[in-house]
Length: 464
Image (tube, rainbow, N blue to C red):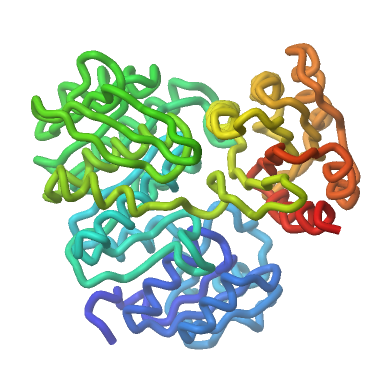
């Protein structure tokens, strides 16, 4: 057994092991020599990738799946209390460990970079992981999405740096004590866990307060919530603050973002010198994510110019403006965007790359609580598309809320002048889109649920 495996994690059982966050921790533990098992609700490529590492993956949830010698049961906030494996663990006295605590244990002793923010975390974490790997620093990393293949969301590296996505949704990022923290933005979201923006600020303040003495906070100088957070933590002792963005006074100032189709050329002013590098994904917000990654990598000791060049090796992460394919002259792109700010940013990026074609969106709202609070803003974002289909709400872990349906979004979109239609029949979407799309158009499947599965079906219908 590797000494880097905590004793309580030598035979862990993961409930929901196929999830983005859970599978990454399971993968790292398996790579470190632990005997890992778990269960998930359905078969997936991620499950297959874990099995290839020697992980035991059960499909379905049953108390019998929990091995007699399990050292701990790892859960996320999405696991319901009545889950039979969780109930069995409690009956048998098996320790129940939250996903964030398991990840914190893996980060122990490493030079940790924790990436936080209401959106952009996965992209920025991925950029750092790819760039630091390209520099030969052999980082470990845990990301909320796959880089280029199922199971590529995590890796146990031999270097001293550990890059991790830090999830604010359930306050679990309070568990980490990084050397470098990134805060990309602070906005109101996750309404089941936060009642106000003030609670969000307090949560991010707690996260920043966990940065190790002498550590660094990399924070946006542009986004209003991040600027407010900076003013609140400015006087924290032992904290170095590095602001990044287009604002005049930013420590790492973005001088120019030059769009070039599906890439961007970014010029920053750093320590009095200009530095230009390429970001191989489209859109201003991805360029700004890359600049935050640059500042964090420098803070951990990577040479600035080498790191800037290495960032160009990042070519995207699954579900973040991922090109799924092209058929009949129509490109189909997949987007994980589910918050209005993310939606607007991705639509603006795609608009810049459309080169005269139309932007058609298939949007699946994610969570009833988010739709209740932000549905009007989601509708406003869809006005940036030429035409949109809106599916029923993807419930994920939530039960329905009376009166909250996709109509909230559709009505707001129409009020903003958008061409939008409801499509409650998910199976009908490929045929409807194929009937709408013309050569040169871009189709964007958008949302955090299973709307991603429609991309290949749309391509198949377009090509038939």
